Image (cartoon, rainbow, N blue to C red; front, side, top):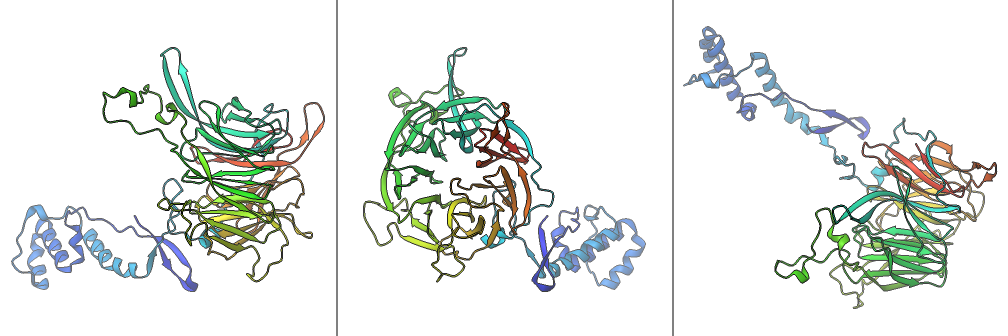
Length: 516
């Protein structure tokens, strides 16, 4: 059944549903013809009321009617007439309706036909609120927690009972802390599955490869970026910066890696080898080139870790870079700077381009102003964080470092460089903090944003700028009776198979909290 919207006064659309009866006759598609309907009625009369048939034939001027009992409609006369009426009325109805293209697919990921402006106008369901903490995981770290992410992490283990390798992917809470470690925690049991310490100082940022999650990239206060293999648990590459590495990210296609550090450099790397297992040889007799797998093993996890990156572009900025974000099509790298009023776009090479050859379009740079007027170059705040909407068509930009008394905001823009209109301004209710960078996460359906705060609260914001709920999540008193820090350091979203979700946050109270 098509979902339709009828145009009403004022240009608004009202959703209606058309569900015309479908005749059981196999030739029902012909019913738009009045001659055919008259013949159906004649067949019906011949079958049920033969005495009335001559008068009907004379009135309708039907000639040479061949009575065939098999064509007699298996229904009553009223249904026939109603079907005919609807078949003539439907084309007129279709002239005044439009098919809504604002429909998401069954996974909620389609967003076909939506524009960035449409998305910015989504209404948050009235029943969606943050009620409070529903679960906690403690004892994970004796030091402050810094970052958190939900990711499917690969494990490959040898089963001594069957003498076979078994590969599996587990949804883990991945978090870093001041103790220099990165921990992988089973989101169901709360047990730590794996602990790594690739750096000599705290890890400030990390990312998991989007196509092969055996590869992890981490950036640290020790000024290094390390690519690690989560199967062998060995570092594969180390890239060095002169100061803190504050952001790392893989492009959605996996071809590029980007880092941002407080030496004011953004570096773009390109993969020089494949992230996936080598193709299997067709010659089955050539065992030297065959990757023999156990039944429950996985080729991408069984092969040697081949992925490597090499630097291809270094961007030296005027101030510290604070946020980097890849375009969902891997066509641009977007970044923001401290003390800058613009978002910067750097065009990434097309797969067909030879990046060693400089062309007029190589590494093209564009900008988008955060000020309402393109002629206004005043810097009154910095954008310290960016996240992509679930649709990939809208980007949320979180502000801080304000000049004056204004609090933090979330600014909404279309993701494309030419989409310069500000589509929303959401006040978070938090004041800017010189020592704590703000973080946020979209709720899974993209109708609201949850922001962190330095005072222990999570704030749920609707896209019209309303604060739907604000709940105290972190801070309080420890088991020893001592007060703990209230800073909420990072947040991620956990979505269950049944569509429910919870916010997973970490903070300086060393707790992992689930809020819903």
